Length: 462
View 1 (tube, rainbow, N blue to C red):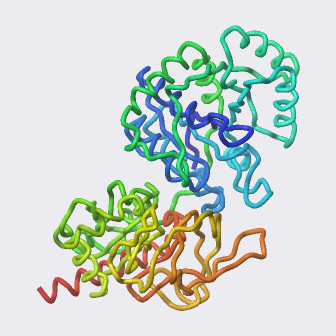
View 2: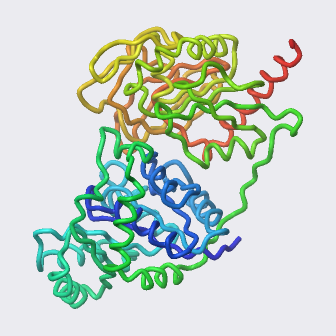
View 3: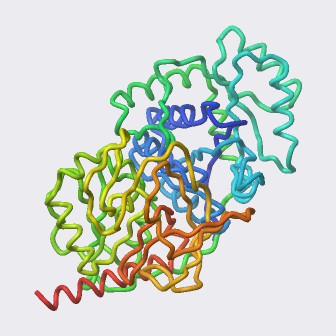
């Protein structure tokens, strides 16, 4: 199939170059112009899409060439483009930074696989002619590089015209504009990335500041022309259908609040495409689950920041523990896995009682331990996979567990490093690895079928 999809990718020469601030500011400027924009994020990041959603008020997709095939990624872009005028994709790390020290699954790889033009955001503070050498190197490092131009960050209005002329003469690339230093519009960092969008109380004001600045300092019209020149997306139609009828559709409770907020929109949509009804609840604020629930999905987040409140909600803890022990199908990833422990340490190292499903304690460590992409090979049969089957996942956490589990062998791509992880039963997946269920339809189908069976059995008992 072919789908028109005006699009561009905002990349950077390195992390902390300002691409998230620029991407969000550009999206906000487009919204203020009345232009319907779709947002995407290259890689497995949960945080940046939260900001995208806040800006455009709609779904933001993750495009990840480790999790997904090139065709899956092109299909996701096409799906988002149907109801929108332009798609803005935010890159990851440096433009060519991919798995290990390769360019696989990098922002460049995404651009090459989808024929998407890239615009580099470059921190130009304290730079002069050398910045042209860097840009030329990025533009010539691969053929095709897909680099169509640059935006300069942290540049004064007086210096910009000279830098623009220099760069365009030396590299032949377009300089679409610049951003001055905007101290009041910076987005703060936390150990797992940016703080979440809901935590930035003046987020809209900050983004409006960036958007108004971009209107004055960036040629948005030229960026839209670049996006419109992108070739149509070619992809294959996805073969996925509901595993149960509307009358048998299981209701899956999804934990959603400040403590649990890391979910992939397309993963949740996959569960709905398979026939499930998703119902949100808050482990922080609610005392019980919604009625008629047949499954649980407790995603990642920052439960360590809310350990006291989670522990204090004894009715919800008892409700969830009873449901899981009764065999209610449950996915508990990273933060959700931490919540299932007997105890969870907060940032100060104080231990708080949690669900008690996993014997042991989730505790604070001084640094990242196991992190990055992994391929999980099941060592035993469980809710999502049978022995010998594989799932793609990623880990990124500073907390560890006295019982991290051994249901899977996790192997890092392009590396000899491996470790055991995860706890499974026929009704449970619990572990630090995050899954992208959109690209694991068999695992998603098993989860929905298990929820439907549980709901049917519970209905028969009622």
